[in-house]
Image (cartoon, rainbow over all chains, first blue to last red; front, side, top):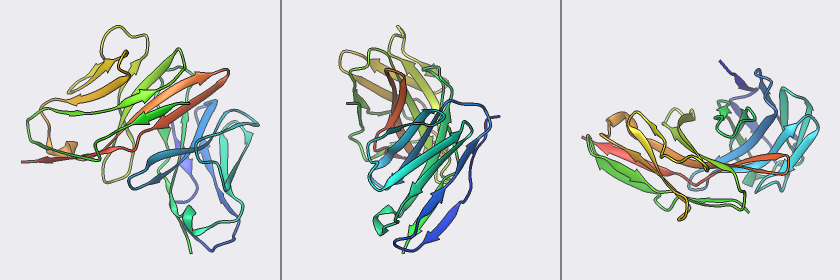
Length: 113
Length: 116
């Protein structure tokens, strides 16, 4: 079974801190995604990557950056965390075929105080 | 630009009845895929059903079927014979491919409540 692992289930940080959210998948998937989930807003795409060192902005990239140095790892970086970045962050990976389903991590609930 | 719209924030249905959850989409990609995911209160995302843009028939998976109307750009999920365990958030999603990038976006979701 594909596993997508997010390093932390809960994280509490202070405003202005640099925050790293790590995601690792074990199925050699090219495509990886970072979403944030907020009540009433659904899942919004922050960044995605279709290959090592390749990244594309999603719909809400402001305040975030990403890193994909190895195929299995996709990191989301909050350069200077702000309270409006308090959210559930979900990482996902998927195989290349159009009909392939996403595999999700269990999510990281980030609170920025 | 791609967009997914789910206009029903919440739906109620009685057990054993059928329910339709609406989803419309917008894309300029010639080839795309449409998905439905279920998210129960536990938070995990559960894949339900997939429809490809070139598929001639509507997808079905057990009690789930996808009513795909390409000209209207709609991909509604139909759940037949609702069960109490169907109470959850439901998300419609679309996967499109532009050049060599592969983007997958979600709608805002519909919360379904099944009552006895």
